[in-house]
Image (tube, rainbow, N blue to C red; front, top):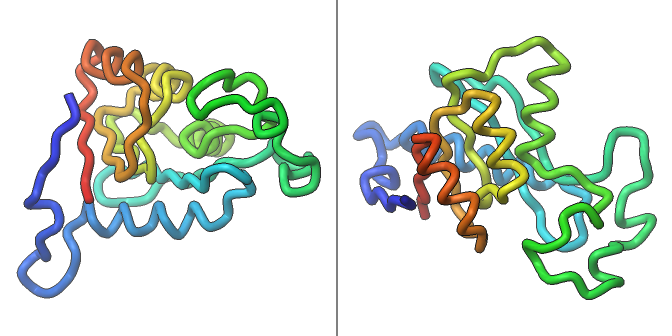
Amino acid sequence: MVQNNPDIEQPTGDGRPSWDKYFMELTHVVAKRSTCLRRKVGAIIVRNKRVLTTGYNGAPSGLPHCSETGCLREQRNVPSGERHELCRGLHAEQNAIIQAAQHGTSIKGATLYCTHQPCILCTKMIINAGIERIVFKGSYPDELAQKMLKEAEIELEQID
């Protein structure tokens, strides 16, 4: 399911990065806005080489950030990838999808670029949002997410 494509890292021939490399670099800039104490994640949704929305992980708008309240998952020693409902933050992918909804932007047929492979919660939203391709850098141990993406025929591609 996860593909590694060495051609993505190659420049376009004129010294510029490929589109995939360019958009992945943007996800790392977006991740710098994250307020999560455990993992900084950024996501962007792109269609026709145009950024439609961005998202990073953190508490809902207007609520205190985890840097102010502390990390409940850390306090309860919850391992990564488990008990998502105990986190006060939203994931970067969720925030990017929500931003599209708030602004009336269709993301059907788009590509999601993310610093990390989506979890199962985000995967279900990605499938229903009509996103057709996911490009990510960091892996995330979620076999069910990978299985459902394969069933939904969504392309999942890991790049360095």
